[in-house]
Amino acid sequence: MKRTGLSVLAAVVTAIGCIPCAAAERRAERVVVGSKGFTEGIVLGEILAATARHAGLEAVHRQALGGTQIVFKALERGEIDCYVEYSGTLTAEILRDEPVASAELLAQALAARGIAVGAELGFDNTYGLAMRRDMAERLGIRTIGDLAARSADPEVADLVFGFSDEFVQRTDGWPAVKAAYGLRQVPRVLDHALAYRGIDSGSLHVTDLYATDPEPQLHDLVLLADDRRAFREYRAMILHRADLAERAPGFVTALTSLAGTIDGSRMAAMNAAVRLEGRSEAAVAVDFLRDARGWDVAVAPADGLPRLAADLVRATGQHLLLVFVSLLAAIVVGVPAGIVAERMPALGRWILGLAGIIQTIPSMAVLVFMVPLLGLGWRPAALALFLYSLLPIVRGTASGLDSIPAHLREAALALGLTPWERLRLVELPMASRSILAGIKTAAVINVGTATIGGLIGAGGYGEAILSGIRLADPTRLMEGAVPAALLALGLQGAFDLLERWLVPAGLRTPRG
View 1 (spheres, rainbow, N blue to C red):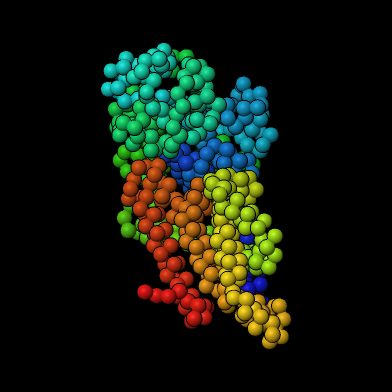
View 2: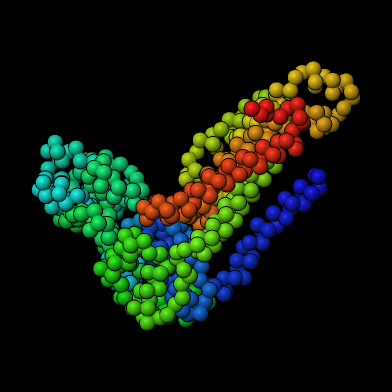
């Protein structure tokens, strides 16, 4: 059994080590496109991916990778080959500590990172503040300056601001507006897609949006004029790896041909097709390339049972990989750590305390910390899940061993068993129910927590859940939430069966 376990662990480690090599071999044959976690970024990513397929390349779109820094760092490290960024984001957020006041300086700063500036697509997607039209007309607010000038008015002072996290944190977002207009409101921070629901319900009154958002028409919002020009220009431009011109010259040429093909109204119409009409980003991208460039690029069906079945099989495989790799590693580390914690109480307090501290760290914070170390994909997500699995396994092992009656230990000692024999033949079987309960708890927690892996390209059920939240599509959300719940229930049932096999009959959980 020990030899088999070591062989499995060695195989897993070897497979993980081979992943970069295999990826390096495939990079010459494919283009990896990235996109941020909002509809427009994904549509533009699909346009780039379809352009690569038109150029005769295999294209992989790692969509909805999260915020600006995650996607840019992925491009810098070579984990993706290209994505669409905005000029204001580059100068105010990504390269804010460097002199990039001109296009030449910007190109030089990016070239130093192995990145080239490609075509500008032709639209400016700047920030804006919006509120319901009926409320703005009733209060006489047409500009952000009006909002600031009437801040002492009780009705205006009671307005609730709700912004996306990125808008609140970025220097070119809420901090720039506060500095320019002297606004003192403390905004609520929430997902950008959910803010419109808050506006409709009346729990929010002012929110941030982008110039190409289609929701103002749907929700009858009015965009407040930026009369003091607090917001920068956000011209959409393609960034790609500098070496892409050598690896895929035809693709770079095709990207160049996209310059100036998308104006603001066209981008807003594509966003509306996805967010308001329910079309897939891939279908919208293919339609654009057919209309704008005359390219006939195939796209997989976006709806129906075939798509649902294919997505479910893929997501289940990715989710199981995250859960079982992290759980196996946690068992290998957590059970011995629990034994040490029970044998050496002073050290055990430190072990349990450290595991408890890890458990309290927000999962998003752990992911953000792991991505710079391990890159995008399943590995940082699996490592984060491994850390979250430790506490229940360590605690279950330590408490199970600690609950063994003293007379049974003395009997084993009287029989002349060595410490290893006592542990293997007496103590671990006696503690098996508690150990298995800790492992079961860790497994069920992992199934739910693994959904955050969708933010960094790890796949799994989180992709559908995040897509459902972004598009306010309950059906899409349930495509991820229901399988995750069923998987958690299935694992719990599997562990109940495993308990009947591993745990001695007299120690099993009583069944009512």
